Amino acid sequence: MYDQQPAQAHRPVFLTILAILAIIGGVLSLVGAILFFTTGGIGVFGSSGNAATVTAGIVLGFVGVILLVSGILDLAFGIGTLQGRVWAWILGILAQALTLLSALIAIISGAFNHNFGGAIGSNIVSILIAAIILFYLNAHRVRAYFGRR
Image 1 (cartoon, rainbow, N blue to C red):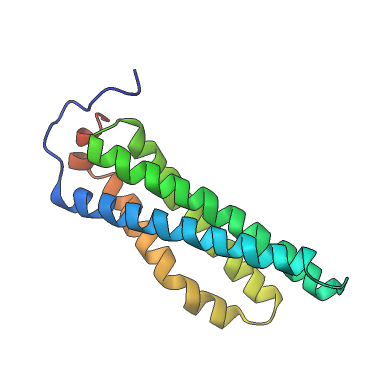
Image 2: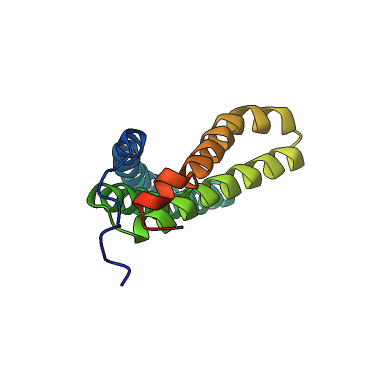
């Protein structure tokens, strides 16, 4: 049922571009996850018991997990969109919601660290892009492509 092709065969051009960018971003996120896992592992297992180094290693490992999940979601969304899979729309919505959530967490974290302005400044682009993509994925023509009303 969820693996069927959408009723509309014509994919909007911007959706194709978005899918290709999602695939590229997914690959880069997976590479980043590997780097964060490696660096985090060195911090946890390569340190001489220094608490700050171990803590930093654990945080880097956690960031690696987030990048891994994000990369898998982006790859699945991009590939599913290019193939016209109905479930790709749900992944696109979920990926952008997670982007908004992570940006919000970064802003709150910045506020607690007395860097609220810096946190907003570094996350405003992510918030705007995610909001635009969410708006676009809910446009009538895009929803119709994915077989949604």
